[in-house]
Length: 485
Image 1 (cartoon, helix red, strand yellow):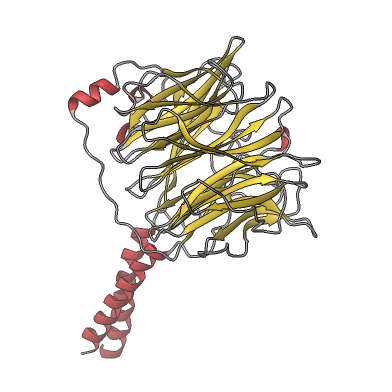
Image 2: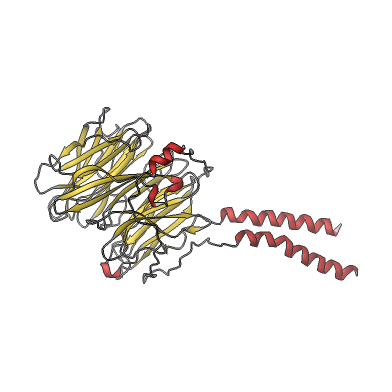
């Protein structure tokens, strides 16, 4: 009788404890950590969540004094970070803004654009690879020039519509300085000629800070800023593509720099049910403002300041969970006392929730969080990366944190398997150097301790849970033997 009772007890405990691993990531932010083996001066990575519970990260780093490359690494909730590998050797003319954007389509193809400049100007290049071979350098297609005479500032953004058409918006000066668009209807095999969507009317202005959004009805929205030759943002623009995707059917100036305004720039846009939300920076000191549109961008509300914080920290990051709830990440600082940090808010239907800190503190030589990039993994895990925008000598690489959201998970789904013909097409021309791993020394910030493992990292977790019933039964038999023998 005692044996049956204790056996059932230990069985129940084992099941309960083994399930704890699935919920180990809590609804509180994990302690911020540095991405391991990450060049300390590199900007935060472009991150993408796939359908198989993995986050893919891409960034641009130096290999040595003369070579630079696009690097790839991945993260999972159970395994943490895998070592980085270099996948594309960008060649001469690269810099911090070389890697421009990366997107993943529904068929499992990664699409990547990067910018290379020279004394003759800049060019925008495109490459792609299938998800199962993303970490193999030879699997990436030979870089294709899609944006000649790009620049003078390095800004571009990839959008993929419901039909799988790739749209790349970029800053260019091919026929005039302005916003350009190239498209591909066959997953990057062939590209249209560049289309000038909007030309600048001031000779010293250039296009920058581009973001785009595809609506459920197929509408494609794009926002960008105009930056003067001293690097100051002068205007923020909104545009909507026409049905034939060859012109803007609507263009509106959202904000203009006036008087003593610091810089008008860094727009971002997202759909919230029946309205568009557009964030941007304006005023003095630099402040986040928001305008909304309930008629698909034809008209816009007066600007409001959703938060009492200030500061220039580049673009916000806005993502949706499995319920369609919008989550906002942004760098900012309070006014009095002056506290810098990376902050989080949720859209509540008519307003944003009060900002809460992911990490915060007084600004130091190594601490000033900026440039958030975020994704939602599996429908309910919010993952964010950023860097500290400090002097080059004091930079500490990229940081990250994550938390569980109040939303149902989405079950993993396999991606389509490539045919043999497709695989051969992908790997015909190896255009990069051999894969290698770089070990970078840790560069801890003064405000936050550094560890190289995620807070839930426990490689022997499965063995640990499996041993629990064994130890339990040993204890039971020990006392049972003492009582009966």
